[in-house]
Image (tube, helix red, strand yellow):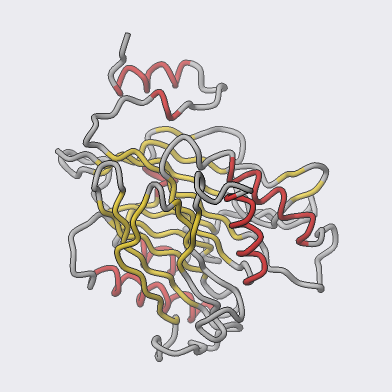
Length: 308
C-alpha cells in the first residue's frame, strides 16, 4: 500500500519521537530526492582546546556521522575547516577498501595558496551518483581571484562553487559551500554580499543551494543578506528531526551554544510550482564514544526536486 506525501506527513507528526525514514517518501522516477550534509569538522591542530581530542581520534566520529547519512539518498557534502590531511582521511574513510563501489571524490582547494595549504571548504560527492559539470572557487575579499584577506578578516576565506548533474535523473543543481570569518563582522557582511552576487550571476537556471559555517546568528546582517535571496532550510523544512537544536557546541559541555551553521535553498522552495521541496532538516549529534568529534554538529537537509 502506497501513501501520498501528505499522508506520510500526518503519520510522521503522530510518531514524532521516532526517526524519520526519508526512504519512505514517495517520489516519481523523474524526481530527484537528495540530501545536503554540512559540517565544520574543526581543523587539525596541535593547539587544542580543553577536552578536544586529537584528529586521529576525532576522525572516526566525523566519518561515522557521514556514513550514517550518505547511503539512502544521493548526497552532496560540504565540509569546512579541514586541512589537506583531514580531507585525505575523510575520503579514505568514505571509500574504504573498495575504490569501485564507493568512489567518493572532492572539489575544492586550500584557502592559503589555492592548492593544498590551509583550510578547505570542500565539497565531497559520490561519482557513481553525480557528474561534476563545473567547479570554481573565489576568495572572500576585494581581490577574489587570488589568495587574499578581506575586510580585516583574521584568516583568508573562500567559497567553493559547483554545478552537478545527478546521474539517475539528469537533474542539475548549483551548490556552494563556505566558511565565513570568525573575527570580523565586516568581513562576514561583505562576504555574503559577494556570495549572493555570484549566485545571482550563474548563467543557468538550475536550483541553487548554499551551506556553511557562517559564524553568524539569525539576527546578524550577514544572515539577513543571504535570507533576502534564499530560504533557510531550518525555517521552512516540512519535517524537523527532534533532539538537537544548536549547531555550535564547543568541546566542553558547559560551552556556549548557538546556531551558526546553515543550509540554504531557493527562496521559492515549498511554494506551488517551485519544483523544489525542502522535505526535512536535521541537526545530528557530534558525540562519539565519550567525546565530541567536532565543536560543531553536522547539519543535513533533505530535498526533492520535481520535474513538474
